[in-house]
Length: 354
Image (cartoon, rainbow, N blue to C red; front, side):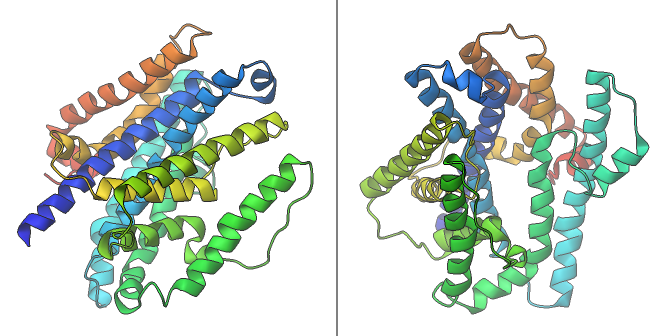
């Protein structure tokens, strides 16, 4: 039993490392190779496919994080009011404090970088989550804070009910958050108005909650265990290709679409990728050490990339992408290791407990 637990932790460590690597990669693509309709119209087919393919690859990082959160957080034993309050005190409040500190830090960083005047009212709105943070990747942390509010109650949901019982709510979320979104994208690409619903599914977490539940059932219930590995690989590649193709088709129609997490192809590709990671046969050297620093890399990499971006030569997207990708993660890891030497700071800033 202990051996199985170690194997599970080991593959999850590698999945977390891959997730943060893809997130850093995605932001490097956005910075090094910006894309708009006029630029796309001048690109060759190969260059367009490469750029959008690299961007889509980076987009797989967040789904992996959400799957891991679902597998780990929804497995917790939270059976009473004391357990709920304990979870909020041990998980939610430290995450909130870290987010507030980094919101302030990013605000000061952007003032330093752009030379804009300091606005206390703007900063307070950001700290109260009434306004987007200065660095856009913090949308993820705001979303996770909302999810953490619901986790104690979701643990009871998945403990008491099977996937069969959850088919109806999850099916409704899939239809509204994924299929309707796809239909609206098809109409938008043809210059037509989309459709909407007055159903409010935010209390179910919408598409982010769907990823969370998928992660739990993929790991704890081994939902795809009977699917052969070769078929899993094929399906992963197939849905990745379809996701890239759809974006190319959309851009060619003059509609600038960068895939988001409510796109069905991205969901399915990430599900099969996660299942492949779950089947990793052996320990990956160094994965655990880097995994523990993944949140630190998340917080640190984007300001580092921006500082480097200001000094990169224009017109070299591939070279700049490699530089931003490599330095963004490596320098973030080095800084995280240094901060980790001061344990109280590491605990507050990066939630590193040891």
